[in-house]
Length: 345
Image (tube, rainbow, N blue to C red):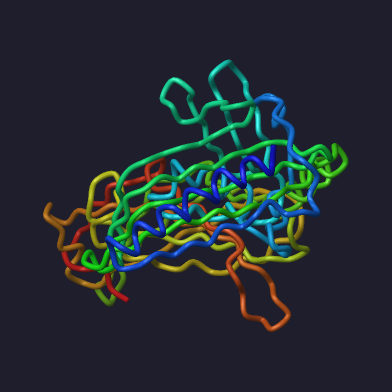
Protein backbone atom coordinates (compact mmCIF):
# COMPACT_ATOMS: atom_id res chain seq x y z
CA UNK A 1 0.00 0.00 0.00
CA UNK A 2 2.76 2.44 0.85
CA UNK A 3 4.56 2.08 -2.47
CA UNK A 4 1.27 2.51 -4.39
CA UNK A 5 0.55 5.79 -2.56
CA UNK A 6 4.00 7.14 -3.22
CA UNK A 7 3.95 6.35 -6.94
CA UNK A 8 0.55 7.92 -7.44
CA UNK A 9 1.48 11.12 -5.63
CA UNK A 10 4.92 11.35 -7.20
CA UNK A 11 3.57 11.24 -10.76
CA UNK A 12 1.17 14.15 -10.37
CA UNK A 13 3.76 16.79 -9.31
CA UNK A 14 6.10 15.74 -12.14
CA UNK A 15 3.36 16.27 -14.75
CA UNK A 16 2.24 19.59 -13.30
CA UNK A 17 5.81 20.83 -12.96
CA UNK A 18 6.44 20.25 -16.68
CA UNK A 19 3.24 22.13 -17.53
CA UNK A 20 3.96 24.96 -15.10
CA UNK A 21 7.42 25.56 -16.52
CA UNK A 22 5.75 26.34 -19.86
CA UNK A 23 2.77 28.29 -18.56
CA UNK A 24 3.97 30.04 -15.42
CA UNK A 25 7.14 31.25 -13.82
CA UNK A 26 8.34 28.12 -12.06
CA UNK A 27 7.77 25.03 -10.00
CA UNK A 28 8.70 23.92 -6.49
CA UNK A 29 8.44 20.19 -5.85
CA UNK A 30 9.41 18.53 -2.56
CA UNK A 31 8.03 14.98 -2.40
CA UNK A 32 9.36 12.53 0.17
CA UNK A 33 9.16 8.82 -0.63
CA UNK A 34 7.74 6.51 2.00
CA UNK A 35 10.70 5.73 4.30
CA UNK A 36 12.16 2.35 3.47
CA UNK A 37 12.90 1.57 7.13
CA UNK A 38 9.26 1.93 8.19
CA UNK A 39 6.90 -1.04 8.31
CA UNK A 40 4.22 -1.31 5.64
CA UNK A 41 0.82 0.32 6.09
CA UNK A 42 -2.43 -1.51 6.78
CA UNK A 43 -5.67 -0.40 5.13
CA UNK A 44 -7.87 -1.51 8.02
CA UNK A 45 -10.35 1.38 8.05
CA UNK A 46 -10.78 4.45 10.20
CA UNK A 47 -11.53 2.53 13.38
CA UNK A 48 -8.03 1.03 13.26
CA UNK A 49 -6.46 4.39 14.14
CA UNK A 50 -8.50 4.89 17.31
CA UNK A 51 -6.12 5.03 20.26
CA UNK A 52 -3.58 7.18 22.12
CA UNK A 53 -0.26 8.26 20.61
CA UNK A 54 2.72 10.45 21.38
CA UNK A 55 2.20 13.97 20.06
CA UNK A 56 5.85 14.29 19.05
CA UNK A 57 6.99 11.72 16.53
CA UNK A 58 9.53 11.04 13.81
CA UNK A 59 9.75 12.75 10.43
CA UNK A 60 10.14 10.94 7.15
CA UNK A 61 13.80 11.98 6.92
CA UNK A 62 14.53 11.18 10.55
CA UNK A 63 14.47 13.63 13.39
CA UNK A 64 11.33 15.34 14.60
CA UNK A 65 8.52 16.08 12.17
CA UNK A 66 5.28 17.98 12.63
CA UNK A 67 3.34 17.25 15.82
CA UNK A 68 0.42 14.84 15.54
CA UNK A 69 -2.24 17.29 16.73
CA UNK A 70 -0.92 19.91 14.29
CA UNK A 71 -1.28 17.46 11.42
CA UNK A 72 -4.77 16.30 12.39
CA UNK A 73 -6.13 19.86 12.42
CA UNK A 74 -3.98 21.20 9.57
CA UNK A 75 -6.63 21.01 6.84
CA UNK A 76 -9.56 22.54 8.71
CA UNK A 77 -7.73 24.76 11.18
CA UNK A 78 -4.76 26.08 9.19
CA UNK A 79 -6.33 29.46 8.44
CA UNK A 80 -6.79 30.25 12.14
CA UNK A 81 -4.01 31.49 14.42
CA UNK A 82 -1.93 28.56 15.60
CA UNK A 83 -3.15 27.30 18.94
CA UNK A 84 -0.81 27.47 21.87
CA UNK A 85 0.47 24.05 22.91
CA UNK A 86 -0.54 21.89 19.96
CA UNK A 87 3.11 21.00 19.29
CA UNK A 88 4.04 20.37 22.93
CA UNK A 89 5.19 17.01 24.34
CA UNK A 90 2.40 14.78 25.56
CA UNK A 91 -0.17 12.41 24.14
CA UNK A 92 -3.02 12.67 21.66
CA UNK A 93 -6.16 10.56 21.91
CA UNK A 94 -8.12 9.79 18.74
CA UNK A 95 -11.64 8.47 19.19
CA UNK A 96 -14.89 7.89 17.30
CA UNK A 97 -17.55 8.34 20.01
CA UNK A 98 -20.41 8.02 17.51
CA UNK A 99 -20.75 6.96 13.87
CA UNK A 100 -19.67 9.80 11.62
CA UNK A 101 -17.87 11.68 14.40
CA UNK A 102 -14.10 11.78 14.90
CA UNK A 103 -12.40 13.51 17.82
CA UNK A 104 -8.77 14.32 18.64
CA UNK A 105 -7.72 15.82 21.94
CA UNK A 106 -4.74 16.52 24.14
CA UNK A 107 -4.79 17.66 27.74
CA UNK A 108 -5.92 21.17 26.80
CA UNK A 109 -6.88 21.06 23.10
CA UNK A 110 -9.61 19.28 21.18
CA UNK A 111 -11.06 19.14 17.68
CA UNK A 112 -14.20 17.39 16.43
CA UNK A 113 -14.73 16.38 12.79
CA UNK A 114 -18.08 15.52 11.24
CA UNK A 115 -18.37 13.16 8.29
CA UNK A 116 -21.68 14.71 7.20
CA UNK A 117 -19.85 18.02 6.69
CA UNK A 118 -17.19 16.21 4.64
CA UNK A 119 -14.54 17.06 7.20
CA UNK A 120 -13.19 13.52 7.05
CA UNK A 121 -13.83 10.26 5.24
CA UNK A 122 -12.50 6.73 4.92
CA UNK A 123 -11.01 6.15 1.49
CA UNK A 124 -9.61 2.71 0.66
CA UNK A 125 -9.39 1.97 4.37
CA UNK A 126 -7.41 5.14 5.14
CA UNK A 127 -8.62 8.19 7.10
CA UNK A 128 -8.52 11.36 5.00
CA UNK A 129 -8.90 15.05 5.75
CA UNK A 130 -9.15 16.87 2.41
CA UNK A 131 -9.82 20.39 1.26
CA UNK A 132 -9.56 22.34 -1.98
CA UNK A 133 -9.82 26.08 -2.30
CA UNK A 134 -8.11 29.44 -2.21
CA UNK A 135 -6.39 31.16 0.68
CA UNK A 136 -4.47 34.41 1.12
CA UNK A 137 -1.51 35.41 3.21
CA UNK A 138 1.15 38.05 3.77
CA UNK A 139 3.19 37.05 0.72
CA UNK A 140 0.49 36.14 -1.80
CA UNK A 141 -2.45 33.93 -2.71
CA UNK A 142 -2.75 30.14 -2.96
CA UNK A 143 -5.18 27.86 -4.77
CA UNK A 144 -4.82 24.15 -4.44
CA UNK A 145 -5.56 21.03 -2.46
CA UNK A 146 -4.48 19.85 0.97
CA UNK A 147 -4.88 16.23 2.06
CA UNK A 148 -3.81 14.62 5.32
CA UNK A 149 -3.97 10.80 5.35
CA UNK A 150 -3.77 8.69 8.49
CA UNK A 151 -3.19 4.93 8.70
CA UNK A 152 -1.71 2.29 10.97
CA UNK A 153 1.56 0.54 10.19
CA UNK A 154 2.10 -3.17 10.79
CA UNK A 155 4.09 -2.39 13.95
CA UNK A 156 1.24 -0.34 15.46
CA UNK A 157 2.72 3.10 14.81
CA UNK A 158 0.42 5.78 13.40
CA UNK A 159 1.63 7.05 10.02
CA UNK A 160 0.49 10.43 8.68
CA UNK A 161 1.16 11.94 5.26
CA UNK A 162 0.55 15.57 4.36
CA UNK A 163 0.05 16.15 0.64
CA UNK A 164 -0.33 19.69 -0.70
CA UNK A 165 -0.30 20.87 -4.31
CA UNK A 166 -1.45 24.02 -6.09
CA UNK A 167 -0.63 27.36 -7.60
CA UNK A 168 0.78 30.23 -5.56
CA UNK A 169 0.82 33.87 -6.59
CA UNK A 170 3.91 35.33 -4.95
CA UNK A 171 3.17 38.94 -4.13
CA UNK A 172 -0.18 38.31 -5.87
CA UNK A 173 1.75 38.74 -9.17
CA UNK A 174 4.27 35.93 -9.87
CA UNK A 175 2.63 32.50 -10.43
CA UNK A 176 4.38 29.32 -9.37
CA UNK A 177 3.28 25.71 -8.98
CA UNK A 178 4.15 24.06 -5.64
CA UNK A 179 3.84 20.44 -4.50
CA UNK A 180 4.78 18.90 -1.15
CA UNK A 181 4.45 15.43 0.34
CA UNK A 182 5.79 14.74 3.84
CA UNK A 183 5.59 11.74 6.16
CA UNK A 184 5.58 11.38 9.94
CA UNK A 185 4.94 8.53 12.33
CA UNK A 186 3.90 8.41 15.98
CA UNK A 187 4.44 5.76 18.61
CA UNK A 188 1.37 4.38 20.38
CA UNK A 189 1.21 5.35 24.04
CA UNK A 190 0.91 2.53 26.54
CA UNK A 191 -1.49 2.65 29.48
CA UNK A 192 1.49 3.24 31.77
CA UNK A 193 2.58 6.20 29.62
CA UNK A 194 -0.93 7.67 29.67
CA UNK A 195 -1.04 7.38 33.47
CA UNK A 196 2.39 9.04 33.70
CA UNK A 197 1.21 12.01 31.65
CA UNK A 198 -1.95 12.20 33.75
CA UNK A 199 0.10 12.35 36.95
CA UNK A 200 2.39 15.02 35.48
CA UNK A 201 -0.62 17.10 34.48
CA UNK A 202 -2.08 16.85 37.97
CA UNK A 203 1.20 17.91 39.55
CA UNK A 204 1.41 21.01 37.37
CA UNK A 205 -2.23 22.01 37.73
CA UNK A 206 -2.00 25.31 39.65
CA UNK A 207 -5.24 27.19 40.17
CA UNK A 208 -6.52 30.40 41.71
CA UNK A 209 -10.21 31.09 42.25
CA UNK A 210 -11.94 34.13 43.73
CA UNK A 211 -14.88 32.67 45.64
CA UNK A 212 -16.28 35.87 47.16
CA UNK A 213 -15.72 39.60 46.99
CA UNK A 214 -17.19 42.24 49.28
CA UNK A 215 -18.61 45.51 48.04
CA UNK A 216 -16.08 48.36 48.16
CA UNK A 217 -15.75 50.51 51.26
CA UNK A 218 -15.04 54.15 50.45
CA UNK A 219 -12.99 56.56 52.59
CA UNK A 220 -11.72 60.10 52.15
CA UNK A 221 -8.19 61.07 53.15
CA UNK A 222 -6.96 64.39 54.50
CA UNK A 223 -5.11 64.96 51.23
CA UNK A 224 -8.35 64.76 49.28
CA UNK A 225 -7.79 61.27 47.80
CA UNK A 226 -10.59 58.71 47.74
CA UNK A 227 -9.57 55.27 49.05
CA UNK A 228 -11.37 52.03 48.21
CA UNK A 229 -11.04 48.62 49.85
CA UNK A 230 -12.63 45.23 49.18
CA UNK A 231 -11.94 41.83 50.76
CA UNK A 232 -11.47 38.88 48.41
CA UNK A 233 -11.88 35.27 49.49
CA UNK A 234 -9.28 33.50 47.37
CA UNK A 235 -8.76 29.73 47.10
CA UNK A 236 -5.48 28.54 45.58
CA UNK A 237 -3.90 25.21 44.65
CA UNK A 238 -0.10 25.20 44.24
CA UNK A 239 1.27 21.86 42.98
CA UNK A 240 4.13 22.72 40.63
CA UNK A 241 6.44 24.36 43.20
CA UNK A 242 7.26 24.30 46.90
CA UNK A 243 6.96 28.07 47.29
CA UNK A 244 5.26 30.83 45.34
CA UNK A 245 3.58 34.18 45.85
CA UNK A 246 -0.11 34.96 45.40
CA UNK A 247 -1.16 38.36 44.09
CA UNK A 248 -4.65 39.87 44.05
CA UNK A 249 -4.97 43.22 42.28
CA UNK A 250 -7.77 45.68 41.56
CA UNK A 251 -8.58 46.45 37.92
CA UNK A 252 -10.69 49.51 37.08
CA UNK A 253 -12.85 49.83 33.96
CA UNK A 254 -14.98 52.55 32.45
CA UNK A 255 -17.44 50.07 30.90
CA UNK A 256 -20.36 48.41 32.65
CA UNK A 257 -19.80 44.74 33.33
CA UNK A 258 -16.02 45.22 33.33
CA UNK A 259 -15.92 44.40 29.64
CA UNK A 260 -12.47 44.56 28.09
CA UNK A 261 -11.92 47.15 25.40
CA UNK A 262 -12.49 50.30 27.41
CA UNK A 263 -9.45 51.95 29.06
CA UNK A 264 -8.58 50.24 32.34
CA UNK A 265 -6.11 50.77 35.15
CA UNK A 266 -4.60 48.01 37.30
CA UNK A 267 -3.44 48.46 40.89
CA UNK A 268 -0.99 45.72 41.79
CA UNK A 269 -1.60 44.05 45.14
CA UNK A 270 1.17 42.84 47.47
CA UNK A 271 2.93 39.50 46.93
CA UNK A 272 1.71 37.04 49.55
CA UNK A 273 3.88 33.95 50.22
CA UNK A 274 2.15 30.55 49.79
CA UNK A 275 3.48 26.98 49.97
CA UNK A 276 2.72 23.78 48.09
CA UNK A 277 -0.83 22.55 48.63
CA UNK A 278 -4.24 24.17 48.82
CA UNK A 279 -5.52 26.97 51.00
CA UNK A 280 -7.92 29.89 51.32
CA UNK A 281 -6.87 33.45 52.06
CA UNK A 282 -8.82 36.61 52.88
CA UNK A 283 -6.97 39.28 50.91
CA UNK A 284 -7.58 43.05 51.18
CA UNK A 285 -7.76 44.71 47.76
CA UNK A 286 -7.01 48.42 47.97
CA UNK A 287 -6.61 51.36 45.58
CA UNK A 288 -7.19 55.07 45.55
CA UNK A 289 -7.93 57.88 43.11
CA UNK A 290 -6.69 61.42 43.23
CA UNK A 291 -9.01 64.38 43.65
CA UNK A 292 -11.13 64.65 40.55
CA UNK A 293 -12.67 61.16 40.53
CA UNK A 294 -13.24 58.78 37.63
CA UNK A 295 -14.11 61.15 34.79
CA UNK A 296 -16.26 58.58 33.00
CA UNK A 297 -19.33 59.16 30.93
CA UNK A 298 -21.56 58.84 33.99
CA UNK A 299 -21.03 61.39 36.78
CA UNK A 300 -18.51 59.98 39.24
CA UNK A 301 -18.96 56.36 38.23
CA UNK A 302 -16.56 53.54 37.40
CA UNK A 303 -16.34 49.74 37.66
CA UNK A 304 -13.90 47.42 39.43
CA UNK A 305 -13.00 43.74 39.47
CA UNK A 306 -9.95 41.73 40.55
CA UNK A 307 -7.04 40.03 38.82
CA UNK A 308 -5.30 37.05 40.44
CA UNK A 309 -1.90 35.55 39.71
CA UNK A 310 0.62 33.04 41.04
CA UNK A 311 4.31 33.93 40.80
CA UNK A 312 7.23 31.55 41.18
CA UNK A 313 9.73 32.09 43.97
CA UNK A 314 12.85 31.81 41.80
CA UNK A 315 16.37 31.50 43.12
CA UNK A 316 17.36 34.78 41.47
CA UNK A 317 14.49 36.50 43.33
CA UNK A 318 12.88 37.53 40.04
CA UNK A 319 9.30 36.19 40.20
CA UNK A 320 7.93 34.62 37.04
CA UNK A 321 4.25 34.21 36.31
CA UNK A 322 2.98 30.68 36.82
CA UNK A 323 -0.63 31.31 35.80
CA UNK A 324 -3.04 34.19 35.74
CA UNK A 325 -6.81 34.02 36.16
CA UNK A 326 -9.25 36.84 35.54
CA UNK A 327 -12.57 37.19 37.38
CA UNK A 328 -14.12 40.02 35.39
CA UNK A 329 -17.80 39.33 34.90
CA UNK A 330 -18.63 37.42 38.09
CA UNK A 331 -17.32 40.07 40.48
CA UNK A 332 -17.79 43.37 38.69
CA UNK A 333 -18.86 46.24 40.96
CA UNK A 334 -20.09 49.70 40.03
CA UNK A 335 -18.37 52.48 41.95
CA UNK A 336 -19.82 55.87 42.79
CA UNK A 337 -17.09 58.09 44.10
CA UNK A 338 -17.54 61.42 45.86
CA UNK A 339 -15.22 63.00 43.30
CA UNK A 340 -14.75 62.81 39.56
CA UNK A 341 -11.47 62.40 37.68
CA UNK A 342 -9.04 59.76 36.40
CA UNK A 343 -7.56 57.23 38.86
CA UNK A 344 -4.27 58.44 40.27
CA UNK A 345 -0.95 56.61 40.20
